Image (cartoon, rainbow, N blue to C red; front, side):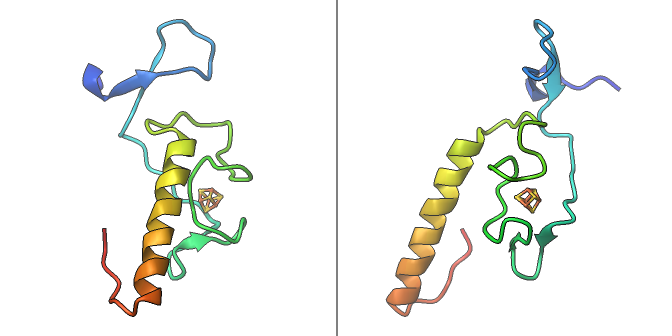
Length: 93
Ligand code: SF4
């Protein structure tokens, strides 16, 4: 089945000019992820696929670069810590 062109991202991993990959049709279940703790047991920190030390590091192309997702996670953690320190209830973002 053909993937619509708007769902494709450049494939920079195989060195082929103009190669494209599906951007959103992939699923991955990592054996190192703890759903109960919502964190990576391998790295003992937040799960951000593709981060340094992750099993996917350098093996996968992400639609959103890992650096940007790490920044977003750090900001999310900062907000959670602030809410906790102020005694406010946690909210899902
Ligand atoms: S950071 Fe990587 S190795 Fe760790 S749980 Fe997430 S996907 Fe798995």
